[in-house]
Each structure stands twice: as structure tokens, then as C-alpha cells.
Image (cartoon, rainbow over all chains, first blue to last red; front, side, top):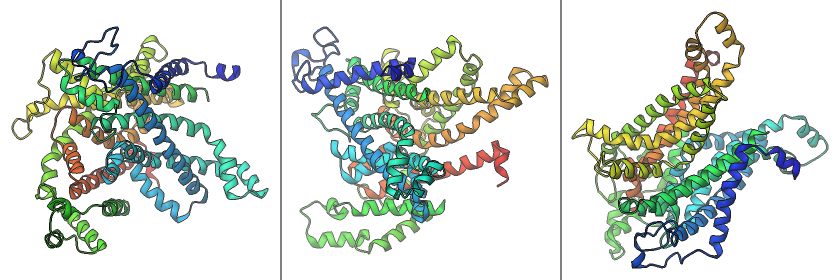
Length: 269
Length: 303
């Protein structure tokens, strides 16, 4: 642990983990308790300015923004984690098999993957949502599917690189089966690359989810979501700019924290 | 490339084919009689087998006929053609901003690598990369539109009426799209410049008596641009996607508006056409990147 700490004790890593840690803690607290009920409306608090009672102020229904931000963060984190999970699992399977076996199927899949990869994930998700319909589950699925190509591409090229190395050949000589070679021998060796792309993928997922929710096709009301809050806040920018600023700032901090973490972990290797 | 486009077009068409829901039923409402639905299906050509419809759709696409919108009952091509200049202008503006700002800035930062200025710009860069364009757009329309009152948010000016005013209105959205991309470019370009600057040919160039400016611009920059070409090529597609969201922020009736309304209206011919168009742009950009590689890097021309 000490050695590990020392290894990662660079500036980026520290700042990144502090930001991410605080945000994660807030999300965890938000699961059990928020300062106010997230859907409780109050006419008296309509557009209340940020104060000690309402740290981030109140929205057009007098709902506490901090409480809604906490709930929204939870939604965003959940969607982002599941998205990356779907993308990684399928990306690893497809990428590893294609990279290891090659052949015609690899050619075809990767040709299509090339286009999908350069296709912006938010757009891909938009298409999938137009097929599946809106809602939290569908957004997760859509984003997850949209993230498969980039993971598959990275894993495939890494597996290809590893395949020409001696340890793979000797494992094969020792009689290890294909699946054993792929998942027991090669996969652990590409973990560092995979890990940093998972972190970047998480960030892209947060940004894409926020974008989709902003467009009104992500998380549906009355559930809170950071992107949705931004789009609602836009109509009240003049009277209550804090309504837009705080949810947006939370998105920025989330992405910043993870980007610094990713930077900090790769810097040392 | 053509094969890839064919494969993509097939996937797009097939994907919209397997979703439940009949376009004819949704147009007439669920109370419509069976006969009228059948008649409309025949009129819309929905009663033909899947592969026939795909081929005729594809043939139409090649000829520039993108089909008819379900909800507006007008040709998709004219709908898109009217909105396309808006999104294209926005993308080009953001691209010019990204390239135009990131090259001089990264040269400057690389020149002072390791200094306080370098560190500050690193921090700013990380921050800028984390801001979603649409949030930036909201902040800008609040600050410039409501605090400073430089422009009226939502007061989009059509390019047909007043092209200068149209460009002026697009500047802020373009900046909102460009800033995160610009930050990423600076980060990539800075490290590429520093890698190149440590190479032997730079020392040779200096020993030949060239000035720092000449070395940087004529030798280092040219080599450092190579990894950036890929990034910028992909950034074009990203910017189109980004503009879809940012267009909503600034209330610009571009391609994004069509895509979103047609998605919520289940107007599939329009969605299919827009998607295929963007796929085409992506493929063309891949091709452009390949060609540019050969222009910048003579070593690649041999094979």
C-alpha cells in the first residue's frame, strides 16, 4: 500500500482523487439522505438565492437544488458506471476474439467498427434511443452499446500486439487452450491500457448522459438529472443563474476529477 | 470505403426496420380502419419486401432523393438541404477557431515548457477539457446575453436574410464547441512539439543558423502536426454531434433540430438520412486524413 501510494503520489493523482472522493461521498450520502426532499415543492422558496438553508438555492418550484443535484449525480454516476461496464465487457470479448483469431469475421467487424468508432458516441446513442425509446434504462443501454466499438478497438490492437510476444507462444506450447491464453494470460497484461480507457470512457459517458438528458431524452422527470436541470434552468437564467451554474459545475468537477485520476495513473507507467 | 458505407447504410436501414410500430398506423392514429392503413402502406411503399425497399432507398440516396418525411410530407432532401448550411457553417467556424487558436498557443506554451506559465496553462487546459460544450454555451448566453447584453439569446438570424448577422450569431456557439476541442489539441500538440524539439534534426537546423522561429514553424510544427491530423479529423464528427446539442442551447434551427424532432416524431426517413449523411462525412474525413498524412509525411507516399 505504501509503495503504491508513493508510486501514485503525483499532483494530478492527488487532486483527482480528492475531487472524485468528495463527489463519490456526496453521491453515497445522497442515496440515504438529502437535505430536503428532492420533489418537495414550496412556493415560499421559489428562486431562493443560495443561502445557509439552501446551499445552492432553489429552483422554479422551490425545490432545493443541492438535494436535486445529489440525486442527479447518483443517476449520472449509475448510468455512467453501467454504460462503461456494458462497453468494457462486450468490447473486451469482441476485441479479444477478433484480435486473437483474426480472419474474415475480424476484417468485417473491424471495418464496420472503424466507422462506428469515429461516429460520435452521443450520436450513436441518439440513434439507438430513437429505436428503443427514452428513459433511464434505454439511455444506459444505448450509451453502453455506443461505447462497445471504442473498447473493442483498443482491446483488439493490444491483444494483437501481445499475440506476437513469446509468453503467448510458450503458453500455447504448454498446451493452454485459446480461451485460457486470452483471458488468463493476455488480458492481465493489457489491464493498464484498459484501465485508463475505462476512466476516459467513464468521463465520456458522464458527458454523453448529461448531453442526452439536456436534450430531454435521458432521465425523465420528476427524477433529477444534471443535464435535465441545466435545460430547465436555461429558461430562468436571468432570474436564477445559480440554478444552471451549480449542476453544470458538478458535471465539470466530475469529469475533471476523473481526467486527472486517469492522467495521474498513466503518468507513472 | 464504398463497401463500408454500404454496410453502414444496410445496418441503419435494417435497424429502423426491426423496431416495433408501423409508420402507417402512427400516421393515421390507432382508430384508423384496416383498409385505410393498408392503402397508406401501399402508397408509402411499405408493403414491398424489405430488400426491395432497401435497394430503392439506396438508389434514391445515390440520386439525391432521400425519401419523403412522414410527418411533414415533404422531400427529406429539401428539408436537410435547407438546414445543412447552418450546421456546416457552425462546424467550420469551430474548426477554424480550434486550429487557429491551438497552434500558436501550443507553440507559445511549448516554448516556455516547465515554467509557471506552462503549469497554469496545463491546469486551465484540464479544466477546459472537462466543460461540456452545452454548459459552456449556457454560461456564455447568460454572461454575454443577460449580464453584458451583447446579443439576445435565442435571436437567431437566418443566413438567407442577413449572412453577416448569421455569422455573428454563430460565433458564440462556435466558441462553445471549440474550447474543449482546443484544449485537447493544445495538450496533444504541446507534447508532440516537445518530443520533436528534442530530436537530432532540430539541433542540425539550429547549427545551420536558422532562427528559433524558423526551426519551430518550418521543421518542428510540420512534424508535430502529424498526430494532430487524426485528432482533428475525428473532431469534425464530434463537432457535428456537439453542434446538435449546442444548437439547442442557442435555439439555432440546424441539423440537430431536425434530428431531434424527427426522432421524437418517429419520422424515420429523416433520421435515416441524417445519420447516413453524418456517416458519409465521417468516412470522407477518414479519407481526407489519409491524404493529408501523405502530404505531410513523405515517408508514407512510397507504399
